[in-house]
Structure formats: structure tokens, C-alpha cells
Image (cartoon, rainbow, N blue to C red; front, top):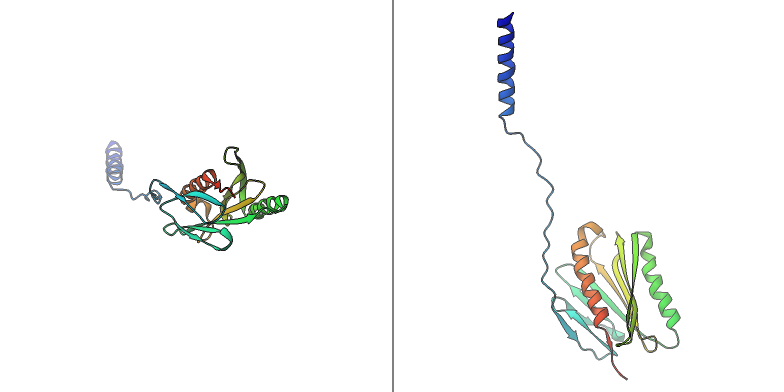
Length: 189
């Protein structure tokens, strides 16, 4: 009986040793895409319109009709659309339209945060919106002097909205949008 136990123990020990010494295949962990963007350098964008702003020199800027601008990021397939409207005793309508534009994305958004912006020295007042989730736009703002000028800006990517995938690019361009808003200056008439 002892011989049988010894044989059985040797067989089990050999089997365990053989199994333990094999390389066990394990799946590799998920890889994350490393997106590195250049440190932003901002240049003043002088316009023939009633305002100027600073934009990232990594972007390209196209002036549109009626003092609007498109700030393109070709490497990211993103564009900031800046639209200008003169204030003509219609500030309430312009504010309502800007807020309505943002909240139309609420259906697809996980949340929208509002960040007021006030610069009394430059006479710039506005609101910056961050839209979380798979919405068509992830950031918007409006800015005004309440008397003559009103600007609305929106960020769009030319890709299916997938918030997690475009988050690094969104964060980068959102910072540029903040810079546009914070550097905004109205020209004296």
C-alpha cells in the first residue's frame, strides 16, 4: 500500500511540476492610444471685424462672411465655428438662441456644465459650456459686450461622437476655446 501511495504521489508531483513550468498564455492588457499634441502658442488674430482674439498657431483660421471664423485642427479633424451677430436691441433673443443651441445637445449628453465668464476691463461677458457624453459638440461659448457685439462658438469633430475616444483632443481644443474667449477684445467704433 505504501508503494502505491508513493507511486501515486510521484505521479501527481510530476504532473504538477510539468503543468507549473509551462508558460501560460495570458491576454495582453488593453493598449491606450497615446495622443501627444504640441504645447499651444497663441497669436493675435487681427480681423477687419469689430473684435480680435488669440488662437493656437497649430490651427488654421478661415474668415467667413458676416465676421464669422472657422478655426480648423486638421490633425484632429476638429473645427471651432465662431459666429458673430451685431446687437440691435435684441440681446435677449441672442442669449436665448445661444442657450437653446447648447441645450439641444442635452438629449445625447451625460451632463452640461456652465461656467460664467466676466471681464469688466475688456467689457466681455459670457458663458462657457462643457458638454459631456456622445453629443455632437463637446464645448460651446457665447460672449458679448451687451451693447453692440455677440459671438457664439461651437466645437465639432468630424467623427462619430464617442466621448471617451476623443476626450484628449476635446480637452486640448476646449483650452483653446477658453483662450479665444478670454483674449476676446472689442474694437472701439
